[in-house]
Length: 64
Image (cartoon, rainbow, N blue to C red):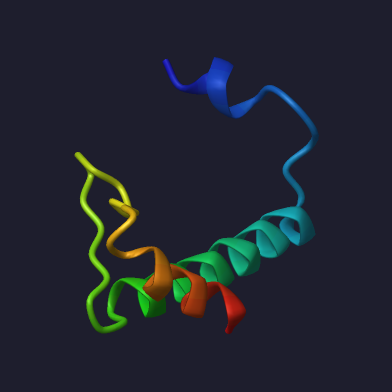
């Protein structure tokens, strides 16, 4: 049942999978650091919950 999903698109080479994995790990690392930054939270319901009140904090995170 997964074949239609996993067999479409470009050929899945070892190099392509490795590159994708490295990219995902990099993104995860950044998100993990942001989530653990003082005063920042994330939830499946509200996402990053960026509000006017937290705008300054997010502006500082983006600078880094």
